[in-house]
Structures are given as structure tokens and as C-alpha cells.
Amino acid sequence: MYRIWIVEDDPKLASLLRACLEKYGLAARCADDFEDIMTHFQQYEPHLVLLDVNLPSYDGYYWCRQIRQVSTCPIIFISARTSDMDQVMALEYGADDYMTKPFHQELVIAKVRSQLRRVYGEYAGEVREKKIEQGGLALYPERLELKWQEATVTLTRKEADLLDLLLQRYPLVVTREVLLEKLWDDQQFVDENTLNVNIARARKKLQELEVTGSIETVRGSGYKLVLEPYELGEPG
Image (cartoon, rainbow, N blue to C red):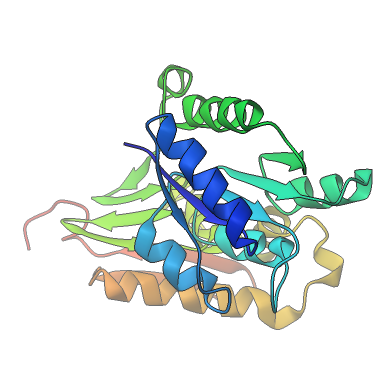
């Protein structure tokens, strides 16, 4: 059963949405802590999020960006804001759709079902999931996961993009310029230390998996992925 998470601070509307979703055979849960959205998101692991724009402390745009760092699950904004700019911002921050209040329940169900079909259902079956593997180290960029043997770690979007390049070009060196272009569209505004920070985070994820090898700095050029013979399937 698909799990839908409703992040809406109007209790009455949230309850109505939950009842509507459950009526059509979907599991639904309403957020009740708007200070720590990410912890509850990762605990519930929803297949889709219905996200309001106007929320306490941080708005929905902020939380959309945070969710996109760890997940590609569909996000549908539900908001009383009707301007074109609000809808553009939602899509730019990673949302899949935008609905303005008030809305008919049938429209909510139709849009939710459409996104579920696209990502998990009959339409998704036409697209093979991307997997990049070198020596037993497997990256699933669409689900933001890195796997080694039986262990798996969750990546941020930047970590996944970085490892995507390093794995695709393994064992060659990837220049800093290429990495910056891949990770940031407008690299002229990227602080010099930003790439170093993301490299360090990716190295930490490899350490968590206990991979014998790491991301090696090639002075004056860039970075390359180094895997020891054991990771390449040779006798250890």
C-alpha cells in the first residue's frame, strides 16, 4: 500500500485529505511536528508528499529542498498561493506538481494516482532503473543509494552526482572543472571549498560501507576513485 505524507498545518484540512486518501485505499499520515520535518520524513518513508507552502518556522519551499537532498519521491504542493511565481518556485525547488486551494478531492486523488503511476506503477515499468557498478560497489542514483556487499547508505543529491561521475569514469581522473559543472549549473558562484566539502562527505559514505579504497586527490588535476583488488573481485 502506498504511503502518503500530508504536511499541512491546518488540522481540519489535513484530516480531510487523510480521510479522502484512505477512502481510495491509500495509507496516509499527517505531520504533527513542523520543527523537525526531515526526521519524521525519514522515519515514515512516504511514497509521496503533499506539502503546504505556508508552514511554521520554515516554509514548504525550504522543506522541499531538504527532502530533495535525500529522496526523489513525488512532492505535490498544496497552497492558497495562486501566483505563477509561487508555482514556478515550487517546480524549481524540486516539486512535481502544484495545486491551489480550494480544490476538489477528486482532483487530489487524480494527481496523487498520476504521480504514483509515473514513479512506481505501470508507466515506471517502461523505464529501467539506472545502476552504475564497479568492482561490487553499486550506485543507484535515482534512489540516492550506494551499496557495497550487504550494506547500503543513503546519499544526498550532490554526493550521488559526484559518485556517478567518478564511477562512470573509473579509474580515470575527473577534473575539478568537470565535477563543478556536473554538480552546479553556475560554477562561478561556487565557493572553492564547496567541492572539497562534498568530496569529504562522499569519502565518509565509503568509510561507512567499509569499502577498502576511497576518493583520491590528484594534485593539480582533480579526483579519482580508487578501489583495492578485493573490491575488484580478486582474491583477498
